[in-house]
Length: 284
Image (tube, rainbow, N blue to C red):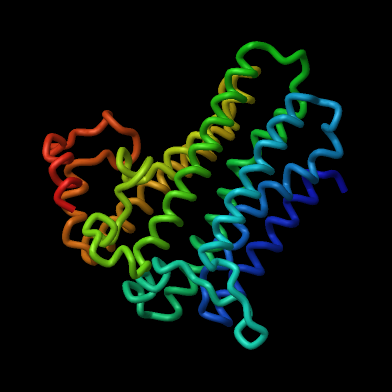
């Protein structure tokens, strides 16, 4: 059995684990707990075939660093909360919203099988797959490789910074000393990178997986694995719409914030109230 077959069987096992885990526990964050773990596992298994290829090793190390960062952040937010009685019990709040929208248990378990487990885990495999094909690319590293690595590192650091700023904000929001700080008590972050983008973490996350694809594209041209980051982009669009709908219902000021701040990349969005942003932040 070669390394690719091993990872494919891991994918199938993960789908079964996540589906049955959700079915029996009604906790549907099984995939969330594997999202940052599987890509490093895949590239480490493939490493035995491509360890002599520096282009592969560099891309694999960056994917592993991405996984360490995201796993740590998810753990800090309680994503791996565990008890012997309940097992892993942390769950993304959006699954509860979807359970309310799909109250029929049978239909929800079909959703669990085909979207939560099958589609999402297949997507994780797909957007990691360019690294596997990169292992077969020969030739010395060139200037473009170093540019892509530099961009990848900038995006990795940017996402880590956004995560740290978000965690810091939530801690401050619950601090008794900040209870009269109107900007902190808005309910959503407007500090650091979050001042310029409503989802700077998404921007950096997506950017990294497009870079992973372009490591391959820059050497062989268009490849079908472009579908990985492209579909991930569509998934993040849907996630943004859903998360912002929930946030707008919870926090009155968020509707105005959306009119003042780019959803993803600053200065590339039409913002009818951009000029009011400074006053909005000053007031709060």
